[in-house]
Image (tube, rainbow, N blue to C red; front, side):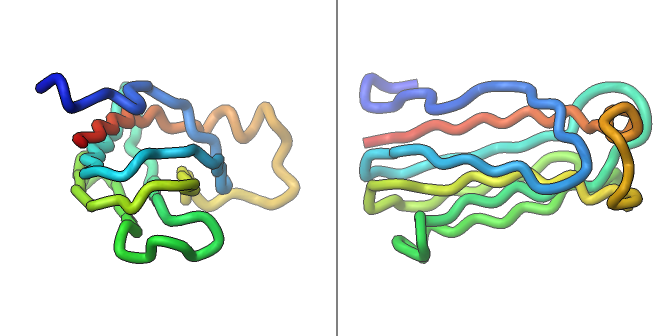
Amino acid sequence: MSKLERIVMDVVMVVLPGLKSDSVELEAGQLTVSVQLVGEGPARPVNFSLGGYRGTDQAATIEIDLSASNPNAGATRRLLGGQYNIGLENRWPISPDAGLATLANYGQRVRVNMVLAQ
């Protein structure tokens, strides 16, 4: 990694069924994202998304679908800078009435790595 690159995120998250999203501030630059299903047990389908807050910076949009047949993937986009939404969705089919204990049985570990180069 060069002096002009910084790690924005390097975590393993347990994603339960349903959509989880958050928002981050990122500077202008080139963002490289890699996502990977990790852990033991069956690979559950997960979607990773990144997009400009309220539709800004549409060229930065990333959509990655992970599954047993595609357990890791990545993308690189040029960012204008500003606020971006990051989403992780475990797409395992489950009853909308399922409780937390049931949801926890279907969690999927996902490694998310994001590097921003200036």
